[in-house]
Image 1: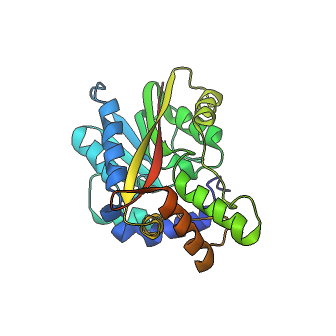
Image 2: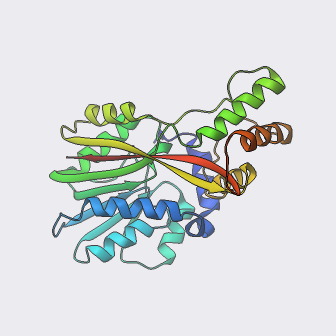
Length: 263
């Protein structure tokens, strides 16, 4: 199987390596997960539920607790995350799988959710098509993912510093999907009824270096091979960041969360 997840092997290794401390660092992710749960409150007695990109299993466990009579499944492509989730001994059926190649039959699930995972997928249309295939005709698909404006202050700082130090215009990193691309990908996958919107949240850090450490610690630092960040570039970017994006006792960073609901 050829994965369509960005830098698949590298991303899988990174997430596997941070699995043991992931829950401590991802309170933001859990808050977004609670919003997803609130979107399916009106669904009564679903037989089957799937969590795509389950990570260490926080949202999957919440779904199991909320729908105790349902069969709850979780998939992730990082084996380390799944091993950590299994150690909790929750009553969840777990599989190692790529979002673009789900190991389930057609019309398998009443509810499919995914929390802050699809930003890692290169071909969203293909991934959404897999979910559409596995979803029952009257099922509900709810997901969240980070959007293009996430960490925009950091990338502006890196772009400006790279231009000053090396004369290059842009930091070489693949940008995340924007709202229009997410919506069109759902349409391409065959979802006729859909609601896609985004929210931008400011998160505060003591410094740009603190932000970079957080990004690394949650496993979200899998850059393209030509995207090298040395001390000199980081130092220059930190100067720009501190000058332009300071607030109170530190700096702020934007996290754009795209929410999608489809039938």
